[in-house]
Amino acid sequence: MKTHPVTLPEMAIVAMTRGMAGAGAGLLIAERIPPEVRRAVGWTLLAVGAVTTIPIVLSFLGKRDVST
Image (tube, rainbow, N blue to C red; front, side, top):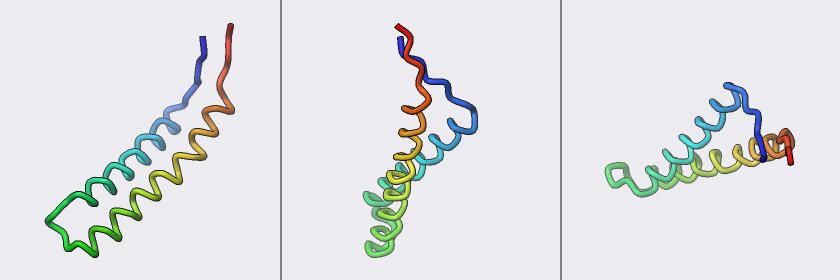
């Protein structure tokens, strides 16, 4: 069984990056904001959420404990 020890601060970081990516995706499909502003902010949030996820995933993979 594979286990992944995760601290509370790490979980907070994961939640924040997922929230940023979700907010970015939401802005991309929203219609109440002018299109050029919506696209700029949406793509920025989505990109930051995606880019910050990479080191988090690598950190989790590096810390995993594989017990067989």
